[in-house]
Image (tube, rainbow, N blue to C red):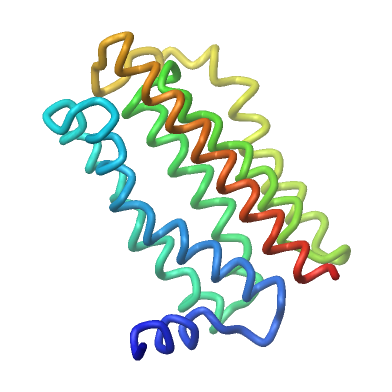
Length: 182
């Protein structure tokens, strides 16, 4: 129980929007190391082993509450920014056919929901990143060849996992922000 108490204290923030960002960042950060395990069960552990590289961003997500405690606005901005950059990295790593680009959708939601009306300019800038990348992504030759190679069946399993993960994350975002707005 001390672990949960410490985690709750680490995530806590007097500003509800910042507290929501901190909670979401910790959920994403703690799920990072689990993602390659999901892949292992879906496509086989030898094929999924290189995907452990995807969890390199986990410590950065886990540091967002620390940042937000000192600079609340920076903490809230860091979440959609880091999410977008991590998604771009995973697109290069796993390839577009894996469906990982769907994670840009929760990044868009985070950029739209994490800011007040007075912070709309920052929100629009953070919205432009994942939306703009999604639009130009088909034209980026550097992303054409993923670093990891998978069979068509493995790519289908990855796409299914990523779509389910994005759906779950989006639902979690909706529930988290609805609690604030109530």
